Picture 1 (tube, helix red, strand yellow):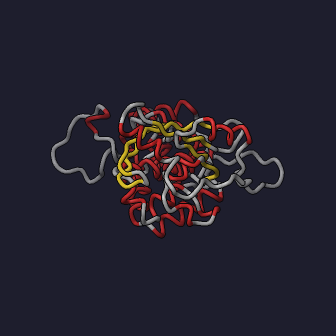
Picture 2: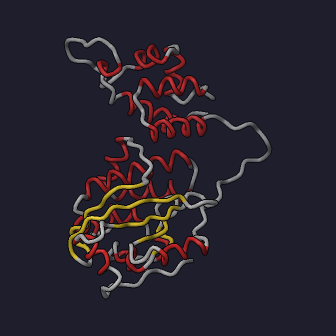
Length: 290
C-alpha cells in the first residue's frame, strides 16, 4: 500500500527545513539544488540505506521499526508533537494484518457526557466550550459562545472553530493575532489527521478549507504539527472590546478526541474585567448540547 501523501509528504517537508550545518554536516560553497537535507544525507545520518529511506518517503516501505523512526526523528530535529505524528503516520502507512472484512471508520461522537457539560457551568464565568476532534463546537457556556460572535448564525453541524477562523468574515477582525491563531489551528488539524487518518469528519473539513481558503491551503502545505493544549488569544473586536485571554485545552476521557477548552485572565486586570462582561452582554445564548 502506498501512502505518498502522508508519511512521505511529512518526511519531505521536514527535511527541507533542516540546514546541513544544523545536522552536523560540513558547510558547502555554492548553491544547493535541494532545500534542506538531501535524501542520502538523511539516510546516512539515520544509519539506514539510501534505498530504504527512499522507499520510506515513497510510502513503499512497510512497518519501519521504532529505532529507525527515532533515528530519523533525531536527524530531522522533530519535537515531541512532530515525533508522535511521525509514528502515527508510520502506523497508518503499514497495512494491518488481515482479520476479516475491513470496517469503515466510525464517526466521532458529537454528544458530550453530562459530567463534561456540568463543567461548563462550574468554570463560569470563565468562557469555555467543548470541541470534537475536528474542532466542531459541541457545547459552550454563555461566555464561551460569545467569544465567537456570529457563529450562532450557522447551523449546528456547521459550527466549527477552524471553519470559523478561515471562513467567517468576523474572525479576521476578532482575533488581533489572527495569523498565529490560523497557523496553530492548521497545525492542530495536521496532528489530528495523523492520529485519525481515515476520519471522515477531518478529511471533509480539510478538503472544504483547502478549496475555500487560500491561506489554509498555504499553511497546510507547510506541514506544521502541533497538539493545541494551551496558548493565548488577543481579541481585538469582541463583544466587550479588546482583551487578551489564555486558554487550556483538556482531553476528555473516554471520547474520540473531545476537548474541554477553558479561557481565563489574571484577576484584577482589565482583561479579567472584560472577560466577566461576556456573561452579561446581550449577545446570543449558548447552544444547547445535542
